[in-house]
Length: 227
Image (tube, rainbow, N blue to C red; front, side):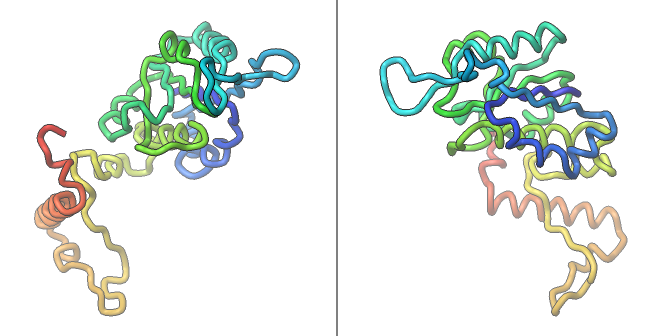
C-alpha cells in the first residue's frame, strides 16, 4: 500500500511514522508513506499557501492553487482509490471504515490547517472526508497519523500475529475483554481461574461474555442494531 500525505507542516508527522509498527511496515516493504510539503507548491517567493477568507472573519484559509497542483501531480503518476481530507466535519472514523481502507492500494490524505481549505478543493478533488472525533485540532497532521496507524497495522504481515488485529476492540462491534499477564497473583489480585485452565472453549466463552458486559456498560451505543 502507498499513502501520500499532503500537509502544511509535514515534519509534525515524521517521528510517529518512523517508529514501532509503522516503521516495521515500511521496513518490510508493505507500506509506503510519502510526505509532501505543500509549501513546495506555494505561490511567489514567499511560497504562500494561505490567504484571508472572502466575506471576512478570523483566521486564514488554505489556497486552492498549491493543493490542486500537488494532488494533480500525484494523480498524473498513478491512480488513487481515495483522496481523503482530514476535517472535523467529516465522517467520524470507525473500525469498519479502517478495515475497508486497509484493502486499498493507493491513498492521498490532505491535512487541513488554519481555518481549513478553500471549498473548491473539497468540491473538485476530495472523495472522502474523515474526522477522528468531535473536537478541533490545530491541523490535520496528527489526525492523518492516527488514520495511517489504524490502517497500516491491518495490512497482512505487519503485525507479528495477524490474528491480533482481529481481536481488537470494535472489530465485532464489541470492546475488548480484560487481559492479564504474569504473575498470576499480584498483591493479592489474581488472574481469573478460567484463563489459567488451558480450556480453550471456556476461555473463548469467558472473553465473549466479558466483552459484551464491558460494551454494555461503557459503550451501549455499539449494541444498538441501528449503529
